[in-house]
Length: 274
Image 1 (tube, rainbow, N blue to C red):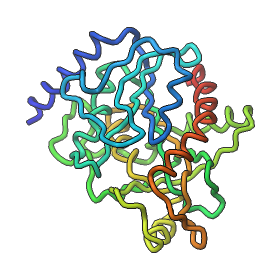
Image 2 (image 1 turned 30 degrees about the vertical axis):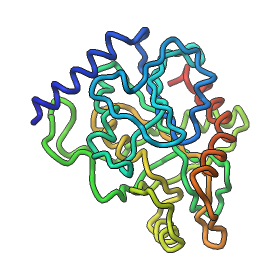
Image 3 (image 1 turned 30 degrees about the horizontal axis):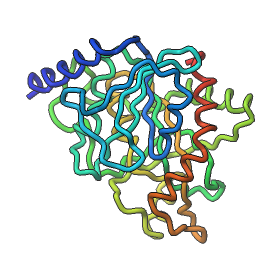
Image 4 (image 1 turned 90 degrees about the vertical axis):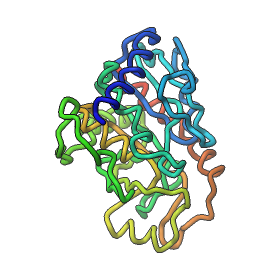
């Protein structure tokens, strides 16, 4: 089973390594409604996911489904413009396939972004929350199954999934740019339904500040592979008792798009220091 998996990954890695025009050390995953950040990238090449061997294809509105190589503030980057979700019917192995190939294509740092519902009473729509920690509420784990010891340990330490170094850097850069940043715990759920009032209340009691349908599996796999992880959420709707919104995916995309420029500015100015 591991040999077959290695063969599949090797095919993908070989294609990307032959096709990539640069050798970035940083990869960025763009979440719902945040595809507009690609406008600030000095684009060198763009590859459709459909062209990449063994690569899944995103089926969700707001996820374009392309791999972009370019420069952001003169730093080489690779951008996953669109991600894969468990609720699309993909297995966890497929959802995290992009993170499984990071080491072999030279990526050392992964930046994850998402749209999330805020449950912290101090949050408001449009806030940016730096993810300090997560709660895995998917009911499964992407590392279940045979472990490839060449890629990572059987029982990875999860005491610092999200890099404290990059959290400190983000706060410092945000302060210099006068960008207000929240920080908190993200709880990952399967979706595709938005949460009920009781679920919002439960998640907040459990210690979560924001809830979403992605990021956690990706962060787990990247961390398992030894990649430094930084993640942030755009608060696009509220699940605060007394302020729970009647929200749909279109509203999430619109709210995320409005905050996109701030995320671009933050990440753009972090780049040379990562």
